[in-house]
Amino acid sequence: MKIERAELIKKLSLSDTVFAFDLASKTIARKAKPGQFIQIRIFDSFDPFLRRPFSFASVLGDRFRIVFRVRGKGTKILSQCHSGQYLDILGPLGKPIAQLQNQRLVLIGGGVGIAPLFFLAQRLGPSNHLTLLLGAKNRKELIMLKDFKNLTKNIALTTEDGSFGKKGKVTDLLRNSEFGIRDSGLKIFACGPWPMLRAIQKRFGSIPVYGFLEERMGCGTGICFCCAVKKKDGGYLRVCQEGPVVNLSQVEI
Image 1 (cartoon, rainbow, N blue to C red):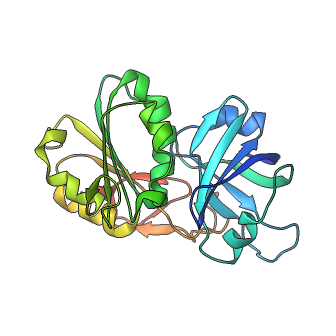
Image 2: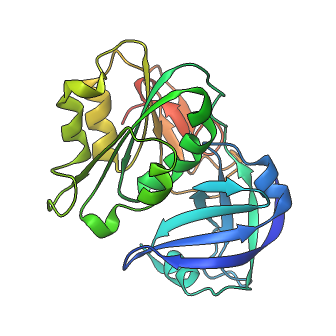
């Protein structure tokens, strides 16, 4: 973990409120692993005061990509950055996902939560069997489809308005036996809104479900406990340190 100044190489608008930044930093890109994240200082001033956390969406060579939705002041300012600008970045942070081989993995993404799953699929795809279940509100919000289709053909898609794929929420696909998710040999990785994570964990409590948790963060290094969530067996889990990817059976969601 260190502070780097990374150049914004390319800025893409994926939808009206979702942006992708391709950033160049040899140090960060070479150390990044699936499940980890960075924190970006929005301004050189202290407004906004706190850095904002962003998961890795992909890594290629000395470059990495983040994908984010404009939700507040910080992300609004960030969305106005331009190519050639340098960003103050702390990372990589968080606990990486363990390297897996010869396993059946189901990756479930909702909305902007689709993005971090691509980096996971990118790294684990060659040595595992992947099935992807991706959903969003509409066709425009189904981001990075071309990238995913280059990795596997085992993809099922949903949109809430029915504009692409099956109509409904991505969790509706979990009732479909064709995906083999009743198999106890599976591992599920999910990233999306809290209601989606709750629904997945509730339905498949006997199968390991690893969720990418999103919480407000302060330091990002485990000191301030701003991002702590309650553990079922007592105590707290720091999303920035023991996560952000955790076994959902261990935390209160």
